[in-house]
Length: 505
Image 1 (cartoon, rainbow, N blue to C red):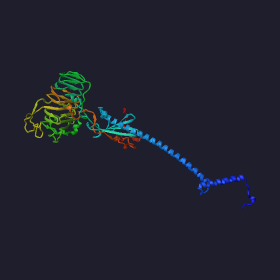
Image 2 (cartoon, one colour; image 1 turned 60 degrees about the horizontal axis):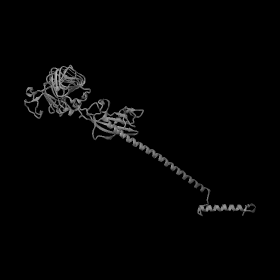
Image 3 (cartoon, helix red, strand yellow; image 1 turned 90 degrees about the horizontal axis):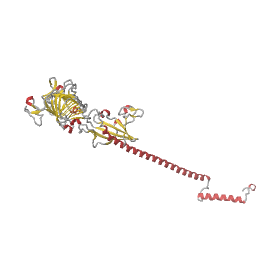
Image 4 (cartoon, rainbow, N blue to C red; image 1 turned 45 degrees about the horizontal axis):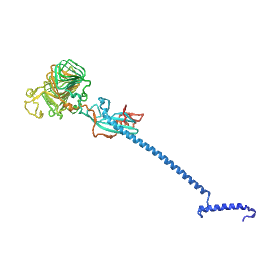
């Protein structure tokens, strides 16, 4: 009990306020504890306020994350749309480049300006197009006139690179225009004291000249006409007829022919000679090695080979023959009956000069020559025997081509087909020559005489990968690159030079 002296006396109104406060605390304590819990405290009130703050903060962060995710999604969608557009445009450019590829090869000098596996770059629309040509046979355009080529069209837009390829082959069924006339010389036609007759045009890409020269046919020329008597029309033209390339026209025949060594031929009057012989796909009297197409190749080693009193059924190819105008040339003498084993193949191809002094337009007799020209195993028109009682027309029946020049020198040479010279040609020495035209070669050009452009092969279009030389691969040194040339600044293999051609798609 508190002593009376320590008691404090409050006014009655204050005591009532205190009592009310106390009762308020009691009420709060009961309400917070369900009437039974611990009394209310200031610490529990603080925790409720913190929880509310965290709830607001969490909601704010959630909204921030959602917003950021929305932005990122929009960016990704934009990149996806851009990437899809780039991919589609790169594909369109690749297709356009592949379709353009055959047109580039219409340039007659393309073999000199384009290398196999090296890219040619163009600017097309918003992207870059590249064309790469690959010789799938030997990777060399300077050889193999009829080798197939795979063309790769590449389109690059942004990071998208797409490649479309197609196989191209030359349309060899389009004849060179020289096959449309009986005779054609690239370097002019001249003559002295001779006569040349034909049932078709005799043409030259230069001039016609001569003295006591008679031409019994229509003529076509690019230069002038001086001297000869022309019993036919004379037409001056401005465009030369197309002729075979002298560096490639022999390739097919050399590659597919059978070699006869020069030393295997007998020497007649000082020259290696095919004399009193039968040379066919089933008969080779010099080495015994046969060729199913009748293609036989002789390297003249800068000299000459003569052909006389023989029967040839095949394509005779004389390479490295004499070209000097003032020397003896490869020549046909005596009498011959000669035609190719394959109907539309040439009868003779000469890398050099080739002249004719044989007696044509007559019948050659086995008994007169003392040689059997249709022995058993080498029939003529299905007939073979061991007797010497047959006769044959003396003529060259087929296409004759000489790269360095050709001439009728004497006698009565007779060619039934087409006579072509890569240089000058003509007639001298009292020759009375005949060239009867055959359109066999114009209808079916032989290898080396077709001039059609490269065309896509049906069924060979495909989506592809870039060929080695055009991959623009990352590199650290030259050996990392197909081209062997690493650009250290860009860190990528060096690409071909850019050609400034703008082609809208």
